Length: 328
Image 1 (tube, rainbow, N blue to C red):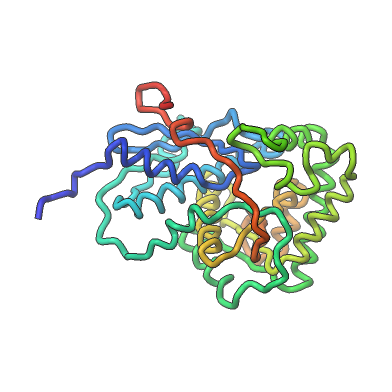
Image 2: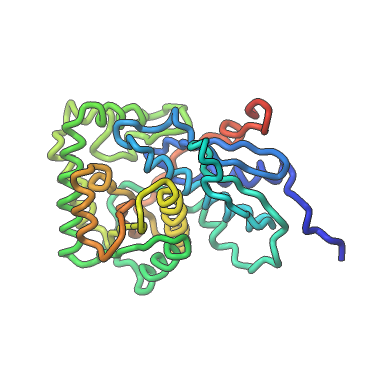
Protein backbone atom coordinates (compact mmCIF):
# COMPACT_ATOMS: atom_id res chain seq x y z
CA UNK A 1 0.00 0.00 0.00
CA UNK A 2 1.24 3.56 -0.71
CA UNK A 3 2.50 5.60 2.22
CA UNK A 4 -0.09 8.30 2.98
CA UNK A 5 1.37 9.48 6.28
CA UNK A 6 2.60 12.77 4.75
CA UNK A 7 -0.66 13.50 2.94
CA UNK A 8 -2.32 16.75 3.94
CA UNK A 9 -5.83 18.05 3.37
CA UNK A 10 -6.31 20.31 0.41
CA UNK A 11 -7.85 23.75 0.67
CA UNK A 12 -11.08 22.20 -0.63
CA UNK A 13 -10.96 19.64 2.19
CA UNK A 14 -10.48 22.39 4.75
CA UNK A 15 -13.32 24.44 3.29
CA UNK A 16 -15.63 21.46 3.69
CA UNK A 17 -14.54 20.98 7.29
CA UNK A 18 -15.13 24.66 8.06
CA UNK A 19 -18.60 24.65 6.53
CA UNK A 20 -19.56 22.30 9.36
CA UNK A 21 -17.46 24.17 11.93
CA UNK A 22 -19.42 27.40 11.59
CA UNK A 23 -22.59 25.65 12.81
CA UNK A 24 -21.18 25.72 16.36
CA UNK A 25 -23.06 27.51 19.17
CA UNK A 26 -21.89 30.89 20.45
CA UNK A 27 -22.95 33.60 22.88
CA UNK A 28 -26.07 35.24 21.37
CA UNK A 29 -25.04 33.65 18.05
CA UNK A 30 -22.24 36.21 17.82
CA UNK A 31 -19.99 33.71 15.97
CA UNK A 32 -16.80 35.34 17.33
CA UNK A 33 -14.29 33.32 15.32
CA UNK A 34 -12.16 33.52 12.24
CA UNK A 35 -9.96 30.96 10.55
CA UNK A 36 -6.71 31.20 8.64
CA UNK A 37 -5.93 28.26 6.35
CA UNK A 38 -2.80 27.32 4.50
CA UNK A 39 -0.43 24.42 3.94
CA UNK A 40 -2.98 21.94 5.26
CA UNK A 41 -3.39 23.82 8.56
CA UNK A 42 -6.25 25.72 10.20
CA UNK A 43 -5.55 28.46 12.72
CA UNK A 44 -8.47 29.37 14.95
CA UNK A 45 -8.60 33.01 16.04
CA UNK A 46 -10.88 34.95 18.36
CA UNK A 47 -12.66 37.80 16.61
CA UNK A 48 -12.55 40.50 19.29
CA UNK A 49 -14.74 42.79 17.20
CA UNK A 50 -17.58 40.41 18.08
CA UNK A 51 -16.89 40.27 21.80
CA UNK A 52 -19.78 41.37 24.02
CA UNK A 53 -17.59 43.56 26.19
CA UNK A 54 -20.24 44.51 28.77
CA UNK A 55 -21.64 41.01 29.19
CA UNK A 56 -18.32 39.20 28.72
CA UNK A 57 -15.54 41.64 29.65
CA UNK A 58 -12.81 39.02 30.02
CA UNK A 59 -13.65 37.20 26.80
CA UNK A 60 -14.45 34.02 28.70
CA UNK A 61 -17.61 33.21 26.75
CA UNK A 62 -15.99 34.36 23.51
CA UNK A 63 -13.22 31.82 24.09
CA UNK A 64 -15.76 29.15 24.98
CA UNK A 65 -17.62 29.89 21.75
CA UNK A 66 -14.40 29.41 19.79
CA UNK A 67 -13.80 26.21 21.75
CA UNK A 68 -17.20 24.95 20.61
CA UNK A 69 -16.21 25.72 17.01
CA UNK A 70 -12.97 23.81 17.57
CA UNK A 71 -14.93 20.74 18.70
CA UNK A 72 -17.12 20.97 15.60
CA UNK A 73 -13.99 21.21 13.47
CA UNK A 74 -12.58 18.08 15.11
CA UNK A 75 -15.77 16.06 14.62
CA UNK A 76 -16.08 17.14 10.98
CA UNK A 77 -12.42 16.36 10.29
CA UNK A 78 -12.72 12.82 11.65
CA UNK A 79 -15.84 12.24 9.57
CA UNK A 80 -14.05 13.39 6.41
CA UNK A 81 -11.08 11.11 7.01
CA UNK A 82 -8.65 13.38 8.86
CA UNK A 83 -7.26 13.11 12.37
CA UNK A 84 -7.03 16.64 13.83
CA UNK A 85 -3.95 17.45 15.91
CA UNK A 86 -4.68 20.47 18.10
CA UNK A 87 -2.06 22.80 19.55
CA UNK A 88 -4.05 24.98 21.96
CA UNK A 89 -2.92 28.54 22.73
CA UNK A 90 0.33 28.06 20.79
CA UNK A 91 1.63 31.65 20.86
CA UNK A 92 2.01 33.56 24.12
CA UNK A 93 2.48 36.75 22.13
CA UNK A 94 -0.83 36.42 20.28
CA UNK A 95 -3.76 36.01 22.65
CA UNK A 96 -6.20 35.89 19.73
CA UNK A 97 -4.65 32.72 18.28
CA UNK A 98 -6.54 30.06 20.23
CA UNK A 99 -5.48 26.92 18.38
CA UNK A 100 -3.46 25.63 15.47
CA UNK A 101 -4.84 22.45 13.93
CA UNK A 102 -2.84 20.18 11.65
CA UNK A 103 -4.13 16.97 10.14
CA UNK A 104 -3.01 13.51 9.17
CA UNK A 105 -4.94 10.72 7.50
CA UNK A 106 -7.27 9.16 10.05
CA UNK A 107 -7.07 5.50 10.98
CA UNK A 108 -9.86 3.25 9.82
CA UNK A 109 -13.18 4.95 10.62
CA UNK A 110 -15.25 3.63 13.50
CA UNK A 111 -18.41 3.56 11.42
CA UNK A 112 -20.22 5.71 14.01
CA UNK A 113 -21.38 8.81 12.14
CA UNK A 114 -23.79 9.91 14.86
CA UNK A 115 -21.60 12.73 16.26
CA UNK A 116 -21.18 14.20 12.79
CA UNK A 117 -24.88 13.94 11.95
CA UNK A 118 -25.69 15.60 15.26
CA UNK A 119 -23.74 18.72 14.27
CA UNK A 120 -26.60 19.63 11.96
CA UNK A 121 -29.30 18.49 14.40
CA UNK A 122 -28.09 20.59 17.32
CA UNK A 123 -29.35 24.11 17.81
CA UNK A 124 -30.27 26.16 20.85
CA UNK A 125 -33.97 26.00 21.73
CA UNK A 126 -35.10 28.79 24.05
CA UNK A 127 -38.74 27.66 24.29
CA UNK A 128 -40.17 25.64 27.20
CA UNK A 129 -39.38 21.95 26.95
CA UNK A 130 -41.92 19.18 26.86
CA UNK A 131 -43.01 17.69 30.16
CA UNK A 132 -41.06 14.48 29.66
CA UNK A 133 -38.08 13.32 31.70
CA UNK A 134 -34.61 12.89 30.26
CA UNK A 135 -34.13 9.13 29.74
CA UNK A 136 -32.27 7.24 32.43
CA UNK A 137 -28.58 7.04 31.60
CA UNK A 138 -28.42 10.08 29.31
CA UNK A 139 -27.11 12.45 32.04
CA UNK A 140 -24.29 9.98 32.66
CA UNK A 141 -23.55 9.94 28.92
CA UNK A 142 -23.38 13.73 28.88
CA UNK A 143 -21.09 13.74 31.90
CA UNK A 144 -18.86 11.19 30.21
CA UNK A 145 -18.72 13.27 27.04
CA UNK A 146 -17.69 16.34 29.04
CA UNK A 147 -15.05 14.37 30.93
CA UNK A 148 -13.33 13.39 27.67
CA UNK A 149 -12.63 17.10 27.16
CA UNK A 150 -11.22 17.62 30.64
CA UNK A 151 -14.26 19.18 32.31
CA UNK A 152 -16.96 18.06 34.74
CA UNK A 153 -20.74 18.10 34.53
CA UNK A 154 -23.16 18.34 37.43
CA UNK A 155 -26.78 17.31 36.84
CA UNK A 156 -29.69 18.81 38.79
CA UNK A 157 -32.93 16.95 38.16
CA UNK A 158 -34.51 17.23 41.60
CA UNK A 159 -36.87 20.02 42.60
CA UNK A 160 -34.64 21.48 45.31
CA UNK A 161 -31.58 21.63 43.06
CA UNK A 162 -33.45 23.16 40.15
CA UNK A 163 -35.12 25.69 42.44
CA UNK A 164 -31.76 26.78 43.87
CA UNK A 165 -30.41 27.38 40.38
CA UNK A 166 -33.63 29.04 39.24
CA UNK A 167 -33.40 31.58 42.06
CA UNK A 168 -29.83 32.40 41.02
CA UNK A 169 -30.95 32.78 37.41
CA UNK A 170 -33.66 35.19 38.52
CA UNK A 171 -31.14 37.24 40.48
CA UNK A 172 -28.75 37.23 37.53
CA UNK A 173 -31.40 38.40 35.07
CA UNK A 174 -32.47 41.15 37.46
CA UNK A 175 -28.86 42.30 37.94
CA UNK A 176 -28.18 42.40 34.21
CA UNK A 177 -31.49 44.14 33.59
CA UNK A 178 -30.33 47.00 35.81
CA UNK A 179 -27.14 47.42 33.75
CA UNK A 180 -27.94 49.65 30.79
CA UNK A 181 -24.76 48.66 28.93
CA UNK A 182 -25.56 44.96 29.21
CA UNK A 183 -29.16 45.48 28.12
CA UNK A 184 -28.07 47.59 25.14
CA UNK A 185 -25.49 44.98 24.17
CA UNK A 186 -28.03 42.16 24.29
CA UNK A 187 -30.44 44.22 22.21
CA UNK A 188 -27.74 44.83 19.57
CA UNK A 189 -27.56 41.09 18.95
CA UNK A 190 -31.32 40.58 18.70
CA UNK A 191 -32.90 40.59 15.26
CA UNK A 192 -36.41 41.54 14.11
CA UNK A 193 -38.45 39.31 11.84
CA UNK A 194 -37.12 39.07 8.28
CA UNK A 195 -33.75 40.55 9.26
CA UNK A 196 -31.27 39.17 6.70
CA UNK A 197 -28.16 39.34 8.89
CA UNK A 198 -26.68 35.84 9.34
CA UNK A 199 -25.92 36.23 13.04
CA UNK A 200 -27.60 37.21 16.29
CA UNK A 201 -30.87 35.83 17.69
CA UNK A 202 -34.32 36.48 16.31
CA UNK A 203 -36.73 38.19 18.71
CA UNK A 204 -39.13 35.29 18.33
CA UNK A 205 -36.47 32.87 19.59
CA UNK A 206 -35.34 34.97 22.53
CA UNK A 207 -38.62 34.87 24.42
CA UNK A 208 -39.59 37.68 26.76
CA UNK A 209 -36.31 39.59 26.48
CA UNK A 210 -36.44 40.93 22.92
CA UNK A 211 -35.53 44.37 21.59
CA UNK A 212 -38.81 45.85 22.85
CA UNK A 213 -38.84 44.27 26.29
CA UNK A 214 -38.15 47.54 28.09
CA UNK A 215 -41.37 49.07 26.78
CA UNK A 216 -43.71 46.23 27.70
CA UNK A 217 -42.03 43.75 30.06
CA UNK A 218 -40.47 44.52 33.43
CA UNK A 219 -37.11 43.05 34.31
CA UNK A 220 -38.76 41.18 37.18
CA UNK A 221 -41.17 39.54 34.72
CA UNK A 222 -38.28 38.44 32.51
CA UNK A 223 -36.48 37.06 35.57
CA UNK A 224 -39.55 35.14 36.69
CA UNK A 225 -40.01 33.72 33.20
CA UNK A 226 -36.41 32.49 32.93
CA UNK A 227 -36.48 31.09 36.44
CA UNK A 228 -39.64 29.20 35.54
CA UNK A 229 -37.96 27.69 32.49
CA UNK A 230 -35.21 26.34 34.74
CA UNK A 231 -37.61 24.97 37.35
CA UNK A 232 -39.80 23.28 34.74
CA UNK A 233 -36.99 21.71 32.72
CA UNK A 234 -36.38 17.97 33.08
CA UNK A 235 -32.71 18.54 33.92
CA UNK A 236 -30.42 21.50 34.51
CA UNK A 237 -26.67 21.11 34.16
CA UNK A 238 -23.61 23.01 35.32
CA UNK A 239 -20.34 22.54 33.44
CA UNK A 240 -17.19 23.23 35.43
CA UNK A 241 -13.43 23.24 34.98
CA UNK A 242 -10.61 22.86 37.49
CA UNK A 243 -9.29 26.40 36.94
CA UNK A 244 -10.39 29.61 35.26
CA UNK A 245 -8.01 30.82 32.55
CA UNK A 246 -8.07 30.91 28.75
CA UNK A 247 -6.99 27.28 28.45
CA UNK A 248 -9.86 26.26 30.74
CA UNK A 249 -12.34 28.37 28.78
CA UNK A 250 -11.23 26.81 25.51
CA UNK A 251 -11.56 23.32 27.02
CA UNK A 252 -14.96 24.22 28.49
CA UNK A 253 -16.24 25.27 25.08
CA UNK A 254 -15.18 21.97 23.57
CA UNK A 255 -16.71 20.06 26.47
CA UNK A 256 -19.97 21.97 26.20
CA UNK A 257 -20.18 21.36 22.46
CA UNK A 258 -19.42 17.67 22.98
CA UNK A 259 -22.30 17.40 25.47
CA UNK A 260 -24.67 19.27 23.17
CA UNK A 261 -23.81 16.99 20.25
CA UNK A 262 -24.52 13.90 22.35
CA UNK A 263 -27.77 15.45 23.58
CA UNK A 264 -28.86 16.26 20.02
CA UNK A 265 -28.12 12.71 18.94
CA UNK A 266 -30.49 11.54 21.69
CA UNK A 267 -33.24 13.87 20.48
CA UNK A 268 -32.71 16.48 23.21
CA UNK A 269 -32.25 20.22 22.93
CA UNK A 270 -30.43 22.64 25.20
CA UNK A 271 -30.84 26.25 26.24
CA UNK A 272 -28.53 28.41 28.31
CA UNK A 273 -29.21 30.20 31.58
CA UNK A 274 -25.75 31.65 32.14
CA UNK A 275 -26.76 34.84 33.96
CA UNK A 276 -25.57 33.72 37.43
CA UNK A 277 -22.21 32.75 35.92
CA UNK A 278 -21.91 36.02 34.00
CA UNK A 279 -22.66 38.10 37.13
CA UNK A 280 -19.45 37.98 39.16
CA UNK A 281 -21.15 38.22 42.57
CA UNK A 282 -23.35 35.20 41.85
CA UNK A 283 -20.79 32.85 40.35
CA UNK A 284 -19.42 31.70 43.74
CA UNK A 285 -22.95 30.79 44.77
CA UNK A 286 -23.26 28.54 41.72
CA UNK A 287 -19.91 27.01 42.66
CA UNK A 288 -21.25 26.28 46.14
CA UNK A 289 -23.91 24.02 44.61
CA UNK A 290 -21.41 21.71 42.89
CA UNK A 291 -18.83 19.40 44.36
CA UNK A 292 -15.74 21.03 42.89
CA UNK A 293 -14.47 23.30 40.15
CA UNK A 294 -15.24 26.64 38.55
CA UNK A 295 -18.65 26.90 36.87
CA UNK A 296 -18.42 27.88 33.20
CA UNK A 297 -21.90 27.19 31.78
CA UNK A 298 -25.40 26.60 33.09
CA UNK A 299 -27.91 25.07 30.70
CA UNK A 300 -31.11 23.09 30.66
CA UNK A 301 -31.93 20.07 28.50
CA UNK A 302 -35.15 18.40 27.46
CA UNK A 303 -37.32 17.37 24.56
CA UNK A 304 -37.92 20.47 22.47
CA UNK A 305 -40.86 22.20 20.95
CA UNK A 306 -39.60 22.46 17.35
CA UNK A 307 -38.21 25.81 16.20
CA UNK A 308 -35.83 26.71 13.36
CA UNK A 309 -32.10 27.04 13.86
CA UNK A 310 -30.44 30.46 13.96
CA UNK A 311 -28.72 31.56 10.78
CA UNK A 312 -24.95 31.40 10.31
CA UNK A 313 -22.31 33.12 8.26
CA UNK A 314 -20.70 31.05 5.54
CA UNK A 315 -17.27 29.56 6.12
CA UNK A 316 -15.95 31.81 3.34
CA UNK A 317 -17.07 34.85 5.32
CA UNK A 318 -14.82 33.99 8.26
CA UNK A 319 -11.85 32.38 6.51
CA UNK A 320 -8.72 33.84 4.97
CA UNK A 321 -5.68 32.35 3.34
CA UNK A 322 -2.38 32.51 5.17
CA UNK A 323 -0.67 35.61 3.81
CA UNK A 324 -3.70 36.53 1.70
CA UNK A 325 -7.10 38.12 1.73
CA UNK A 326 -10.32 36.65 3.01
CA UNK A 327 -12.29 34.33 0.76
CA UNK A 328 -15.71 35.29 -0.53
